[in-house]
Image (cartoon, rainbow, N blue to C red):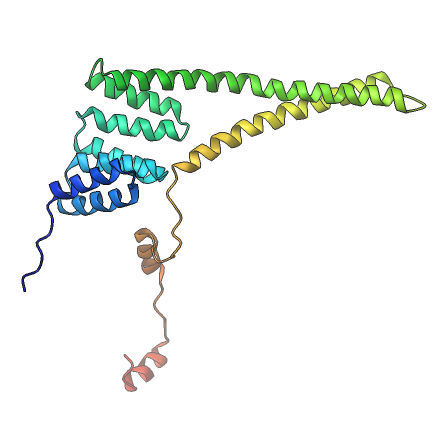
Length: 238
């Protein structure tokens, strides 16, 4: 019996597209991956798989595929658009804006790209405002807490603390609030960076080739004295 004929990249791409329409993104990824193995230079396949990875929140692989699509066809605007979509989804709005800008340069007046460019510009402004306001909001909360402590000290203690000391306490709490708020903003950005990091190798089977070559180069051969060498030679070990 003849073996069933393997589907062509065109057929596999269409199967992937149909799966995307049905929101079956994992199935779409499998079809696109199969097609890429048969046609590894087809940049549209990487673009489509990037979109499917994005929908599955596999941001690292989505960005990798977008970058491959750009490398294979730097004059194709959709590759840059895909890259921008991944970066926008992970909160990297400045990088997304730049990707959208390059896409628009290749395809001027495209409504979708223009809207995405404006959307990312708005988010950049919001991020700048948040970076400027949130630390001071933390300081303001600290001042409120400090004032509450001062009032409580005046109302509920027989001998209130010296006003200068209480003012110092309020300032310290305000500074702590400011620092906590800044740390929170840094934490948010670190979390976003983590979304684009490669997933960990849970199997532990992969090893960096450089490490392997380094292990081989640093492996030392055993040294023997002349008498030990003659003895090993007689025993047939050398």
